Length: 146
Image (cartoon, rainbow, N blue to C red; front, side, top):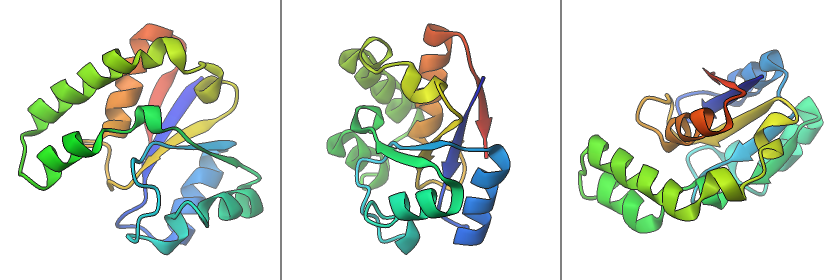
């Protein structure tokens, strides 16, 4: 089974939804702390579920347990934090939240699912960290970054 990740910045709606369609996505799991972003109007919490259903027949789920805290996000983005520190602190947060035990595996694995965040690439994005954190614990999926 594959689990996907995607960012919505630096792309338009046609390309974004086209990549989801090509991957056969049945669920979008929004892992943003703030899912009302103005970065792309079609990616706001109020609009995204509609577009997913109408264009792909896919469902929308917001999962804040996979999001960083505001303090962690601010330390990295606003205060020029170091990525390796952010990564360490975010993974510690995943441990503290016990996400591998408290989030049902079916949320990612019962249909083609993509994790959404704003970052254009997965390189320095917490959506990659979430998947890499869960993969050895759940052991039955591969990661594909769209």
